[in-house]
Image (cartoon, rainbow, N blue to C red; front, side, top):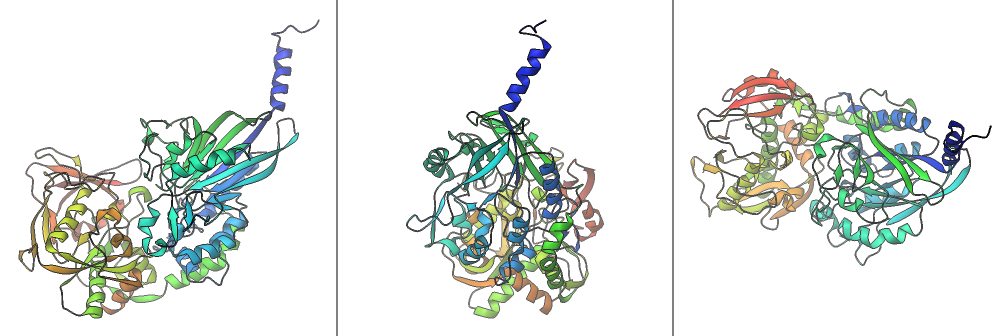
Length: 610
């Protein structure tokens, strides 16, 4: 008997025909590796439990084994961010270990992130020249419009359909970075390159690229925001997804993960399904913490996306890949030897566990070292004040991401732990009034606190902790019952919350002049801090200044509480810190602290009674 139109036999035959027209393509993605190749924390001299490209490499190998067809992309910020990355920049004559690792893993393409420029264009160009894969960026050019790297590329690949037949597939790749790179690295880029907003560049180049390819992947070194985010926003990935012709989006820069519940409610974002404006998307964390996977089912006849799924795989359980460890081993060993170089001794621990609620000896040491360095250079014509900010206070880095230097012998890795970025020294000439404005910007780190209420969250999640940049050498109090002076666009919205600001035990004279030591990054205007051109700049790394200070003047005392919150009776706030903070409560005896509970990310929630 012949099978009827709805019979089981005919349904199976139809499925076979349909399967023969489908190609399964797996897109693998990393982002914000920041030079963390080996699963090793050079600052603490212990293994990284849940990060490192060596762990991600094991995930890549397994993901490739489970897919007939696959492509591997990196979304930028791979050349800077670890001691190994800085060692590589200082040894330009040697093969670049980060590029060597990416070549070994057979990346198909990558884009530039903003941190690729931290060591200058020459270093970047030398690294890019060693890459065995295309590196693209559509929105940065040399002056005059010549592309710095190719704006786009087309990968020609042979892919097998579900019936085993092979087809040629053209995959277009385009990349974008934040326009703010011109602020963050102004001293290295001004007069040499120009940057277009990602959305404007996408509108100019995607249509042309689409004519040359069957599938288009956008590597967006930007975070995930709402679909109508401002043109200059750092969170531009959702907007790029809405450009006609884009099929897949890889997001990054913010060190977050996607799909993830934190993005619920954003316009154009499916936080659970893993799509942006209907396009499959992933954002794979940082330092190799996750591998992003986008599985596509493509119709061979027109290469349209029949269906897709997006997910993340965490690197934590994965063992480091032996083959990659052999490639990076010589550089890793050299960096470990360098980090072990002795500097001196500290009689007190240096950590950032309470750096957002009280003066920290760790950040004070940076301020003290930089001010001393400038006094030695310039003399005492004007008072010199240093600045310090907490770089490692958890946040997106996780519950283990805190500065933690124990009392005892000091080595170069401890200087790296205290100052993690390759920023250079800059000096500003500021009045007392401008110093107050500086402190008002820093005080934006805290939410408005209502008197008489218990356990109010203290920290503003939209304020980056590294912008809590405090001027040392003055004393002041912060009135949390008053709103911050500035909003997150740097517009003044209130009279502020800094009170009782003193210098040398007297009220700070608004007209008095001071030299304030900061970094080239801050002097460039990042965070809205620098109101005028630098009085002096230097190519000296602040980390080198800190290292020399540790040699000459080893820490021997706790930090004086030169700033504090105004008392608020019957009021308490909460903040997250490292569980290791419990062993250091004696370092902040003037605070009324109560440990509460651990959250699902491993942070210890602490109560502070005001």
